[in-house]
Image 1 (cartoon, rainbow, N blue to C red):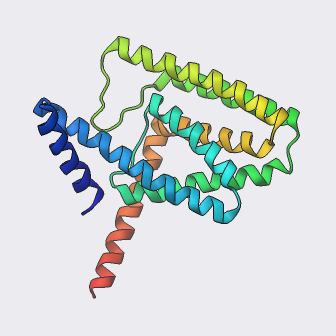
Image 2: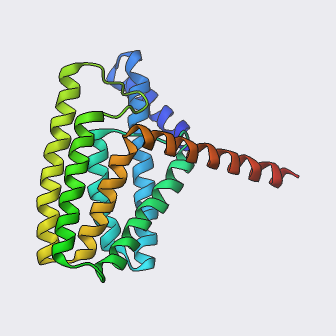
Length: 216
């Protein structure tokens, strides 16, 4: 059973038990698929991060990026395994980036970088949040304003926490978190949608080519 089937069967079961409106089943299925996918991705990512010695950096990057993504939305790959592939490379990359630049950057420079990332993300949130995601089109003006406010509030809390971590803990954690926030900001921007869709198309073609070669 694949992830979509598992989420569909669970959604159908819950809809029967809870007597939910039929029109809400797709939304419930999508939500369950996200939860299942996140759990699997989390286990794989954190296991690989532990093996590579970048567990703390990857865990902090996941926390920073996941909460921000929940509030702001953004582009998705069209299939779970493509999404997993992109997520693994992205978050392991932020962890490695944190370790590498943590040895090179000064606290003062990192503080300015955090402020620059905050201002850039702040402007992007005002312009584009909430980003469109499957089964969650938000057209109501008050709802859109709410997601903007929540995203901006989160960014302010993230900035304060990151500056404190940079000064009193490890620079590598703050750098990994900054990279995750910047990547998420890109994901809900118009250019970000184009890049992720092209990456999705590339992986789709790659997986199909492998399937054909395995059948030959």
